[in-house]
Amino acid sequence: MKKNPKTKEQLLAENEDLRRRLEEAEETLRAIQAGEVDALVLSKPEGEVVFTLKGAEHPYRVFVEAMNEGAATLDPGGTILYCNNRFAEMLKTSADKVIGSSIYRFIPATDRSGFESAFQGGKQRDTTADITLKSEDQEPVPVHLSLCMMQGQEMPVVCMVAMDLTEHKRMEEALRQLNADLEKRVQDRTAELMKVNETLRESEGRLQKSEEMARNLITHAPTPIYEVNLSGTRFLSVNDTVCERSGYSREELLAMSPMDLVDEPSRDSFRDRVTRKLAGEEVNEGIEYQIAAKDGRVLTAEIRGVSFSYRDGKPESVLVVAHDITERKRAEEALRKARDELEVRVLERTRELASLNEDLTAENDERLKVEIDLRETEERVRLFASQCLTAQETERRRIAAELHDSTAASLAAIRFRIEKTGEDVKKGLDVTESLQDLSSNVAQSLAEVRRIMTDLRPSVLDDLGILPALNWFCREYQKTYAHISVEKQMGIEEQEVPDSLRTPIFRIAQEAMNNVAKHSLASLVKLAIQKEGEKILLSIQDNGVGFDPETASKGMGLSSIRERAQLSGGAFELQSGMGKGTTIRVSWPR
Image (cartoon, rainbow, N blue to C red; front, side, top):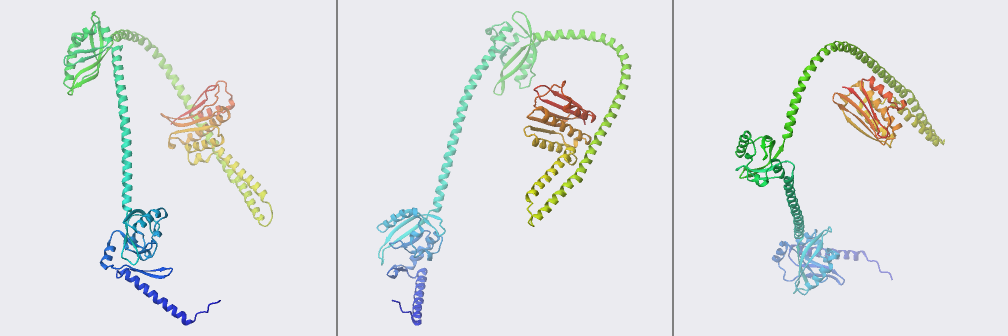
């Protein structure tokens, strides 16, 4: 059965009723916010119900709003009947959006069971709980809740006070981290101290062992070693060699003074040195003394104090090493006599040679003139050969330019026609595959022409210089012969290489490294150019099979390298052997 449609008058009446009810609700909400009444209108299944708190006073409301803690009242179902502004701030929203909402809206699922237990307990007694609320922007807010039942109302109301624990939690976390860091530092420091203690124990053991070894070494050393008390000039200890060389027993020596062993001239020097040392002055070491042995033999010894012991800043004793130089002195005396005899014989022979020298001087002057003429002639030949090499390089540059201007240009024109034919393809002619093959051939032709040009005369040599040219050649060489590693060393600056030597250096390096690739079966080649005194040194070394230079084939390019070196004013050197690799060195004066 269809309902009868409402008339215009009925709709206007309903609209007026709704407007009136809205004005009443707004007025009630304004009164609540102003603290004039405690009331809230909620929609229930049975209709709208107004909840009010009897006996609420405005001063109480002001007090609650001024609290630093959040405060709210809840009905038994968890609906928020009232909250102060602090509680709304904790949830990052306004109070009017919180009032009327369920408290469970602001509690994450993980904390709901804990809250529910406290909430139900709060209906019977005062309870507390630590949970996390969920703010409007989903940020967690740790809080401490205090809940209690408020009696004497129209309906039971649970009062809840929330204390924000965010800063407290942050401080707890910082303190926990600080404790953890401190504990780790204590553990690390303890471990370090244990290692230090262990090291000290090991060092102490090694020191004791070293002291024992030192004592044994001194006792059985083949060199006389003894210790002297400087204040009383008495022997404190002597090793076996002192007893053996002097002829005295250890007991006899320990009852004696070093003064008892040295001769009279040496005693004054010995006393003076001891006095100066006790006064804090520096004394020379390595003094020679004459020593009288028990059997009357006279020994020559070089005395050297190697270690002093001090008390109150003054030397108390000294450890002395005495080198027996008796035989050395005898040999020196014999050598002196032989030298005197030799000087006499040399004088006699010098007189004989002086006469011969006069005759040879005249002959040598004549040979010197001939040698100067030969050097001048050789220099002119080298200059001519250098000019020939320069002309040859000039011709190569000309050929490279012609290849670039003619052949490369023709190939570029062919490629242009290929691209033109590609336009015809757009008109419907299927020549794509042919064009691709033709374009690839043209590109290869261009690459080949450029490679020939580079072989004739690498442009990097003229544009950048010899060092960049050698670097470029090594890179290209490595690409071509991937099985050969190249190590290079540039120990000279570009401006230190004369212009006249740059081409010979590059060509010699090129020829030598090509020979390595063709003949040596090497896996490593080293190229170095550097200064060596007043010379420029180029060296190429490989780890290949090597060869016998005396029986080497003339077709290995060595003659070409030698000629280039000599014609450019350089010196050529070859080192090789079967299974020993090959080294080529060329040096030029700077």
